[in-house]
Image (cartoon, rainbow, N blue to C red; front, side, top):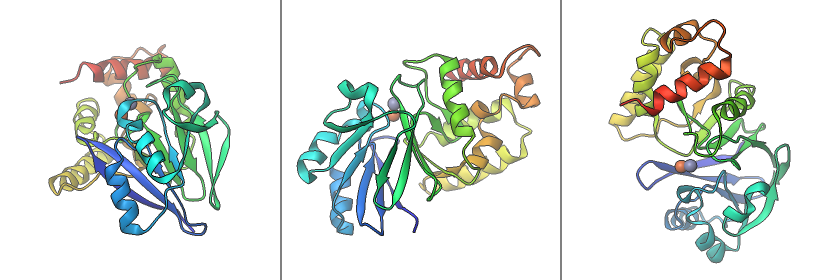
Length: 257
Ligand code: ZN
Ligand code: FE
């Protein structure tokens, strides 16, 4: 039975994911920026919170940790190498570890780049990836604590997941990302189609997530360093490595208005 995944929009553009495993009845929350909307949703569904899964230490991802832990007695899960920066951490995990969430298994993948201790949670059975601020729809996280090479390596791990994987990122940045993607690959038909879909969704104040890995491979400029049209758009030389092309895309995005 698949995970039941609810999306809670909070702050300006954050998403908190409330995740319920229906066989065991276990419930988790991914990156609780704040506590109150989570507590309200728990009451509404009559669920008990068992776990917090943190992807990284930024305030808009851990802000609700301690209040939720106090209110529910839940356990906090985060990256072992970031233990000092994850408030209330109980279960530190490393790259390659698995975590039994009720009857389902979460795989921990380290994705340094946005922060040095960033991890993502992948559930093969439910085809779901909780990727925090590493991968966004048509975008990727800014490089606050890592190099472009490191972030590129991290994204290679995510690219290898099945195309059907649903991408649950922590921010609704899709429309701004789409403008940048179009500036590079205006003739990409998949991109045009996705942008039309996103425009309609946002006009109705609907979330654009989850997307899928297949959709991202076809439209996300940060995953398309092999595309001839993208390489041309960023003035890549034939000798430029994929990581170098990625770095060029990241720099262009940082300066894009
Ligand atoms: Zn962040
Ligand atoms: Fe964030």
